[in-house]
Each structure stands twice: as structure tokens, then as C-alpha cells.
Length: 143
Image (cartoon, rainbow, N blue to C red; front, top):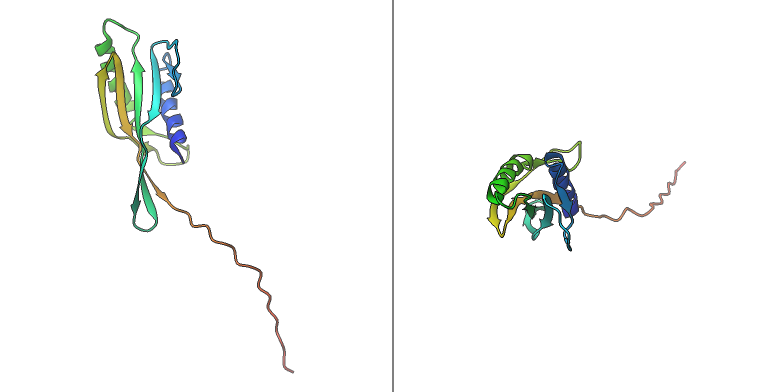
């Protein structure tokens, strides 16, 4: 599992919850059409834990560009409320347990909603061991 898997899961939820909104990649050149979302990984950190485990902290920011230029704050507040509940859990794989979002908060700045959420995971480092070489065994029978 990597950061792009989490971004894919986030965008899947956003597409389901907001089917009329556009989803843009990290680079938005020109011509953004509202309503629209962008999803960014902010800064991934990794902390060692006992027994070969690691905690990976994955903070994300989702920008929402509203369509209503007059009631912008109201629209962003409504979208933020829906996002809180829709993104509480995301599914990375259908047969795996969902990943829970933490440290959820948002702010409204420059007519854009900035929605922050972390999806932290625990990983275990897999040790790659060399397979044993061929063992030749000889037996001698005494008779």
C-alpha cells in the first residue's frame, strides 16, 4: 500500500458523494471548472515501533472550489460537513478492513475550502531471507 492507493480511495469516495464535481490531479493548469476537487498528499512521515513495525502518518489536503460565488462560505460549509462523514472510512481493498480518517479539520481561505485528513497505517518490514542452498546428504550402511 502506498500514498497513491490512498489518493485513489479518497477520489472514489468523492466521485460517489459528489457526482457533479470535477476531480483534478495535483497540477491544475488553467480552466478549472467548479465545482471541483483536488487531492494532495502533504508530507508522509514514518515512525519506528517495536517488533519491526512502523507507523506511517499520511496527511492529505483536499481543496474544494465552489460553484456559487455569492454564497461561497455556505456552500463550502455544506460540502465540508458531507466530506467529514463520507471520508471517515475509506476502502483500499474490498476484502480488507476500511481505513479510518483522523485529525479531520477544515478551513475556508481565498474562496476555497481546505479539508485536512490523515490516514495513518501500521506496516511491518518484510525481511528478505536468502533461501537455503542445496544440501547433499550421503549415507553409509554398515553391514
